[in-house]
Image 1 (cartoon, rainbow, N blue to C red):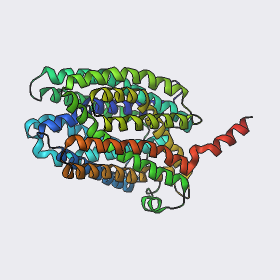
Image 2 (cartoon, rainbow, N blue to C red; image 1 turned 135 degrees about the vertical axis):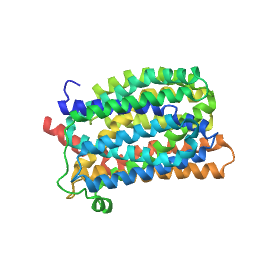
Image 3 (cartoon, helix red, strand yellow; image 1 turned 90 degrees about the horizontal axis):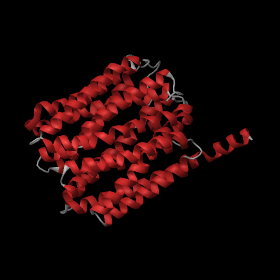
Image 4 (cartoon, rainbow, N blue to C red; image 1 turned 30 degrees about the vertical axis):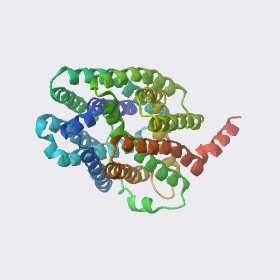
Length: 407
């Protein structure tokens, strides 16, 4: 962290606070909503679809107004909207089911504006030489929160009757979001000189860097949406106890802290292909095994594999996006590509939720739905690696030129 610029450090701090709030609130939010809706999984999926569509709308609004409204204003609106979502759950309590769909718009606006602002800030503030360290420390900090948060969250939930424990967690998340808003004033603010060129970028063809971005983020969005929606619900189905799940998450998070911190020190562009292949292969194998054998031992093994490797994938994914968009050019700014990427990503997330919704409606057995979705996640993991290999060959040509120049 000592090698990060002052602006990078403050952006990192805001990101850490927001991530901490999300960890506190999101660890069991799907379980809470499943309880509140009396097991209505389809309603949760519909809420997520609205969330993702609204997020795209937020990106469109942001891209049109960034010549007049500062980037930090969008960041504040995003965090405030996410905080409002969780404080509303806290205040509505037993009546939350009635407002579940309207609330989806607030979390969608929050996620949309937060990531719109964060992506542009990272593109403008974080140098490429800082990216590995920046994303590595970000993941490490997130992992530290995940060490203590799940066990404490699980204890709080099981300690109090009814849904009181959940309301306490949403209150804590609200406070963390508020601290993030206060720290935003330390981040350099700016507007763009011209409107983000969404239409032109989205219609662009024949650019291998943009193609890699589109296909990569679509696949990641599809996989991530399904995983985010079902994994904790499946774990709850197996263990039927938030306290047990919280303890497991905390133990595996300890592994993640050391793994992420080590990875932040060793990661660079020359080894990102090997690490991503290792992660993709292991995750694909474990999800296929879980689909074939949806039982406690395999689920625990997957928790361990995730603890070791998934943050590697997240760090590389984030760095790859900025490596690719910086090289895409073709008459457009990097910020144009960064904003436009929300569209294939959102399309992937919405597609994932539509697939899940169709399976819920068409397949009688819940466990069969989980099994099919696990296979889809497994395929997506290895497909991500192959997309970058096919489109840009993991920058092998550039790396070879750099080696020749150094020699």
